[in-house]
Length: 96
Image (cartoon, rainbow, N blue to C red; front, side, top):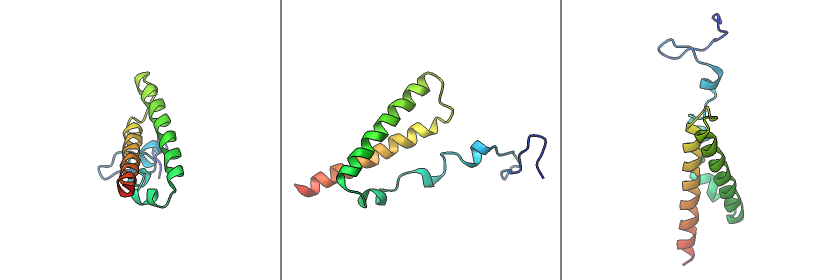
């Protein structure tokens, strides 16, 4: 039964979970898997890299202006950029 705040879900400690907590960026499914990159072409990967770099820049600006509510999202995007860069550098090494 929902409490006065309208919250139905609780964690192990009995604390209320908000909608943001239950759908947050912290879940492992939001991180890009390295296997996802191997199924894409190099052009698609480079396009994705550009989009993520732009998103990373936007998020860092929002963070500096105190407009970003979920700061973990920036580190997730940076991690994905690093995975793509690693993937692309390993492809270059294999060609040489």
